[in-house]
Image (cartoon, rainbow, N blue to C red; front, side, top):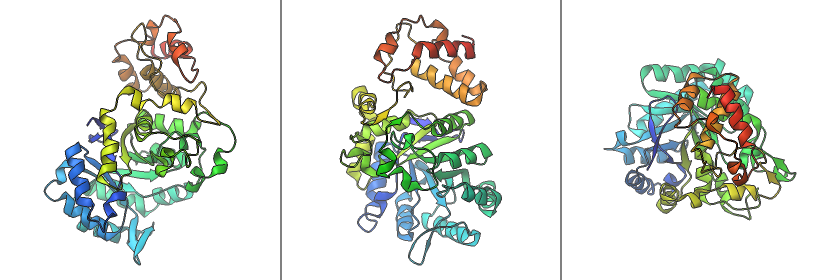
Length: 382
């Protein structure tokens, strides 16, 4: 298992994490085997959005004796009321729900306290200007929550939260179909057939900017819905009209800027192991470029997907990384010091490009790579 820094939190997290879908299977008897498998696989990060007390209690039991081996991302504002899940901003409900959750988890702290499911700007303003964010900050001050996060499917809302400076971790839906869709306050828009009926060209610029701003500000992204709820793995259900493998979906998400961990939805230990098998997959298995380039009615022409099909470079340039740093600088309108440092640490720089064009011949998306190298030299000075 490989590990990545989760933004600037100081947490080192496994590339593959666990979603909590499988914890409830077989009346929660599946929870312990899931954690046993995760520990054996080297998975140290999981998300717990579920508010069902039985699920939370099962997780608490599964963590006994190994709490320090796992980073918990659990949700503030996800509560259990009248026998069912409820998202709430009522601060009395939020506090009661949080306190009950901590007792069931049998832990004194969360690594990430995730403000739950914010997809509208009005909702974000209510959170930011009201008692919910204030409560999250109190929990952080007390050490009960080590880092504050927010979960969202809307890039406009997520960007506002990130730019507020209050959010250290973003849980966001990332996959190659959702990335084509513009911001919406209705998460169902991401699934609608009509959203994919007309030809789609390139990634939504707001989503691209979100990833780049997160990278520049050191906000780590944990990924939900990497498989689109399983739809992307089934050609009959995929909005792209073509199936991807779990490994391709995971690799796509992990090559987006700022992404640290893909929370793989798994209903069984076998499904979790299949996702973790990404770590042993070869380049050919991970390669999503040819599949994306062949999606019906979708074009990424001219857009770098950081897929590294441009390699190898005769001058040994890491073209994908140089392009990523170029995009990060362009998104900020300046060169952040961290971006400059990471660029400077590369073994070879854009100024060494001899414009041979070998990379452009290999690029599935017809990216003007030579021009990008020229721009990078101009921005970074070498």
